[in-house]
Length: 262
Image 1 (spheres, helix red, strand yellow):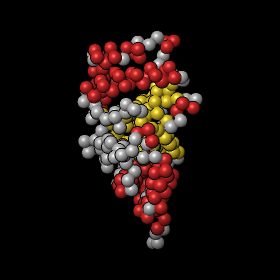
Image 2: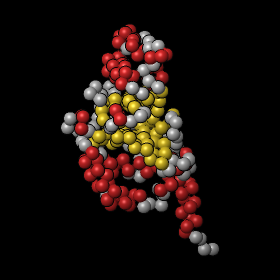
Image 3: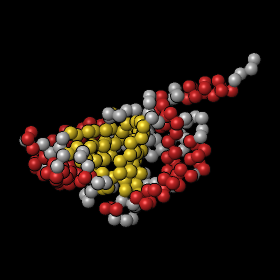
Image 4: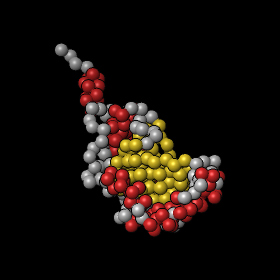
């Protein structure tokens, strides 16, 4: 009996898609990305003061270091002003216990009083998003970018890859880890701060990562090198990783605040 090779490829692909959605991180981190949506400079100042003087110091006292705070490039001119906070956690237990720890921290409640006790007519933000991620196995810990220039010129690129279904999502995660995409970014010097699978958020199924560059020119050069790299061309052409594993890409260009720890 003659067997169609295309049918065999199809069977292999379907079997591959039955792999677990998440590989277990090697003692990996969890990340929370908090997004403050603010409408004016008064709210922005209140949130900045809270993060700088109360929230980040309290997290540091709890052993949570290298907390990142970022604003979109051109934040002052956009209608939906935002502040992004990236918090690394050692475990889900640490994440779940943090609110109770903060409520019992007298220094935190005193330093953050203006924010914490704001009246409903003086709310410090419009809405607050929270996205929870599990670190990729191939990069289980947050990495502080090895950039040497001043922070005000840097470009931090936060990327979100949405997939049409959970099966396609797991295929894209596999492409990053076992497929070698994480290693490729490392070889090309993208200075990625983190990779993570979103386990709670509004745009699931999706993964997110943050690449960092000294400026926009460096960013363009890196992505050009990536697109021309023979290894990427080979990986992206593999039948195992069809383009359908990503249905939408969101990109936000950020700069760290002067009090960001990343």
